Image (cartoon, rainbow, N blue to C red):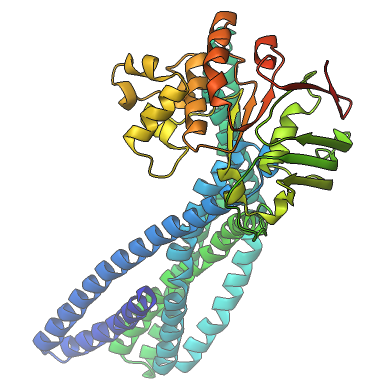
Length: 527
């Protein structure tokens, strides 16, 4: 629809020089062109309506592209393995969702869609020039491609500049995102000036690249307009000779000049198209690279109805890219309904065992089974729905307490949320908050203590009623007395579940039926 409206607008625009020529002819004949002027006014009204329709149509297209492409990019980002995200800065990822999506949308609606009407206007103006004076039209037709070729050579630097600008802009995003998340540390070590200077320096780098782009793109349109104006003056000079020799009439000269002027606008816009293409190619390349990244492997089709909770590692090998192997051939079994604690030095791979059970990562060799079935035979949503996770680094949303607890179960009722909070022994402190369950807890739960955050995380896990519960350093933020109280309160929660506790703390280890120590890729029972 937008292209059609733009094409109609081009047709209307091409009639303007014709009207000017006819009006000039009437005036030279001593006639008052009332009808012509009224018709011209009507055509200009149509052109105004077309401009309105074009703006609305292109604005709607742009909004749809930003929304739909942004959603597709976000969905793909969400479906990528955690390892992919861990290897990249969050600022770079946010830049894909913001800068690249917006730039591509702007290119599609501001450059690509109007391209056909621009070419149509150019072709129409050239054809009409040839009809008025063939040899003049032919000369202009030969000059336009030469002009575009010269402009292409001038703008060949735009693509590397655009890529560098987007790359540096992503780094700037990353600095801002990281520093705002780490603001307490920055303030505690009085590094505000240093971080401000670092952000400003990166901003200056982005500015310099954008200014270099701006100089090239800003020079194009005035340069082309000057060339066009020179060409029009050349037409006037040639036309004056035509009038002197009688080969060209004055009204035809008026139309000739106006068609020449009309030609300069699309040619100047076409000159900028090449630069816009180079900028858009960088954004498109990054988005295509992202969308070509493989999603989390999830080919499991086996239904998972009831879960007893028996977990077995059989000759499992795993290592992170570029790092020594964590496990070469680890064997380990957790019986259904058993509580097993894993201890060991930092970096031994304790949390990785939990990630393997959740299938955040997959083993390089060997198999992990649930009730005797390879985890890869189940779909990821089915498997993860049966596992509750409470980690040391509690991730909470800047939302209400109720939202954070209810996140563990789709469409959870208020009664289910409060029941889970009571089971996690969080109901009492939640009730004392200003708005109880409707209290906003801030980014990452900043308005709560460490222990309160972990109780909410436990409630969020328990609302799923999981067959398997993983507590990964879940008491790390408790003081000794709080930990003992938490452990005492948790004993009834562990019944009839398979529980894996990852901890260094003796009070937590006391909950387990068995304690295993992970060392040099091997699990050994602690007696």
